[in-house]
Every structure is written in C-alpha cells, then in structure tokens.
Length: 438
Image 1 (spheres, rainbow, N blue to C red):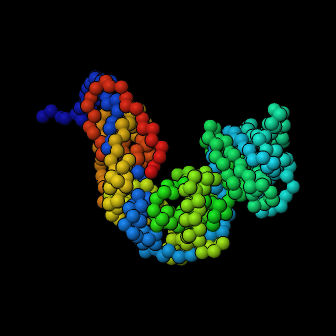
Image 2 (cartoon, rainbow, N blue to C red):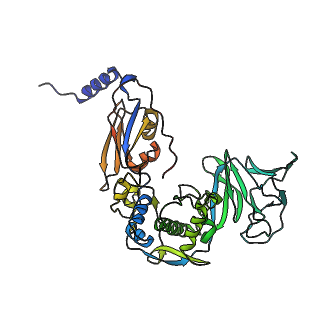
Image 3 (cartoon, one colour):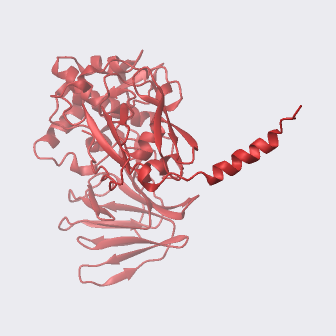
C-alpha cells in the first residue's frame, strides 16, 4: 500500500501557488462606491432629530430625555474656567489685534487666569506676535507695523492677554489667531502657548484659550445653525454645557487642554459665532435662556453627575448605542428610533449619500497591498456596519470595525453599503471634499 506523503502535497501546492499568475492590474478595482445615510458616529442626540422634534412642538427637556436614557435635566454650577485647545501640534503660530488703541501683553510664563502679573512685552495694535518652533524650544518674535523685527528669548510657555479681556481694563478688542492659512478671532479670556513633547513628532506648539464655561465658552459653540427652532438650540446648549462639564478639570497633557475646539470634542469657533449678523444675538440669548444665574446653568445628569453628552448630525433612522459604536457600555447612551433624520426636508444632504473611495485609500485602511473584495461581515441592530472584511488579490484578509473603517475612509457614517465594483481600468474616482456636517 502506498503511503500518503503530506509534506509532498504541501510542497506541490506551494509550488503551484508560486506558478499561478497574480491578479492583473485590470482585475483590481480602481475604486469602491459606498452608499449610505446619516452623518456622524450616531451616539446620543441626533441634531437633525432635535430639530424635527422642536418643529413638532417638543421642549428641549423632552428632546434630551428622548435621546439620553434615565437622565435628569437640572441646574448645576458652571462657572469653571476651561482650557480649550485652538492650535494642536503646531510648528508656528501668530497673533495680533487690529483694534485701534488696543494692545497685547506677553508674559513669559503660564500665568493663571485672573492672576495679576507684570508683562514681559507689550505689542501694539496691528503688530504681529509669532512663535516659531526651533528644536526643543520656541522663539517668540514681534513684527512691528514699521517692519522692525524684535526677537525675544526662547522658552517653553507663555501667556497672552489683550486689552478688553477680563483681566485688562480698556477697549473691547479682539485677538486674531493665525494657524496656517486659517485665522480665528477671540474676544474673551486669555491665550496660553506651550511646548509639549509628542511621542511621534517631538516637541510641538500647543495653543489654548482659557474661557469661562458659563458664557464665554458656550457663546463660541459652533455645532448648530442659530436659525433652527428654539427648543433644538436650547437642547444643543444644554448638551454642550454638559459635555464640557464632564471634561472640565481633566487637563490632557497631549494638548494642555480640557477640550479640543474641534470634532475630537465639540466645535468651538470663538467670536465668529456671536458675530453672525442677526443670528449671533439669537445664539447668545439662547445660552442665557438655559442659565439660572451668573454661575449656574441647566445640564444633563445621571446619578447627579454631568454625563458625556455625545451628539452628532444625523442617523440612518436609529441612533447607535455606545457599546456598539465604541465597545464601551454607557447606561444613558442607547439606541432609539430617529425617523426625523430620514426626512428629506430636514436632512436633504444626508438622507442618502454616495461616496467613491479610491483603491489606495481602501487598501491603506486595511493595511493591505490591494483590495479585490469587500464584505460586510456583521451589522448592529441599528443597521450600522459592525465589521467589514477586505480580501487582497493574494487572498490575504483583514477585518475592521465599521467605525474604524468609516474614520479611515472618511465616510459620513457607518450606515452604509457598497456596490460590487465592475472590473475595469478606469481612473480612480475623486475623493469627497465635503466638510460641513449639517
């Protein structure tokens, strides 16, 4: 009887695999087309849903109790000073005031908010104060209106105040902060500039704006159009106040901040929100309407503590639970029906969307050389993608959670499906350039 030699079979299969021709370039999809609904992570309050409920006559309290389970909406103290990161991982940043007769004061230290100190330099209106990274230090310099440049001693932390802030008497001035090509104006508090060492990049400049949560911070929240119904705006203010309270007092070393001014936490746009023609005054009045007095405002509480009041733009018809989105159980963040997000009159842009994503981006997301096939391996009860599997032309597989793939492929949400691509040598589709989430 002939003995079966398993090693010979393995060797044969190995050689056969080497001799098999690899997939040709024309067989590898140039791009994948994704179709879906909604925008955002899907956890907590749907902003479009809040708008829909407000139009139906629901109050802010009713809206919040609908989206957050077993919570109490009640007054709390909210006069804390927040450090809000307005410039992250920078190599340079500049600032100035254009207000006539105003000036900037520079302190060569991290001076606490409201602490009196003598300035190390005074910068007149329209002169530029710039910080430039040089190795493990930053060099401040002043470019005066005459063109003269003054270089100041290098260091690692500074405080900037301008006339018209809480600590300086005088003109009601604005500070313009330029990061790259973007300029944002700030009216309140003070600015801190600090060098922080990043594990990957080495030293980088972090810029924070210290503002009072009760008013100065909330006046600058840019999360919802101020033209929306009153109850929706109030629900947004209360959710934003609560989210900030939940983060307050927990300075993150990576950003020298309580919160980021962007989507990592919530959008803080400084003076531009209250400067909106007509609507700026409306937004400030809404903030005031959710305040009890000068140091207390309404917040969302669970077991007497402010919750992490997550919110997002719109869903695919049902919100997502925190455990499904992020793998962590949060008792007040469960999925609920959100039919307003599927109403075209409320959510025209994201009731239905299509996004082409290039082969390069998809392959990079899965850390594969290429991707021949995609398969949605599992979905959550809400309809979001729980996991998605990619297979390369060599048969290698890689699996990502729906949320991880959404982030890497820059899809609007995890409520998505995709078309099986036709094999062709078509040029890759353009990437999406949408930036607004509302």
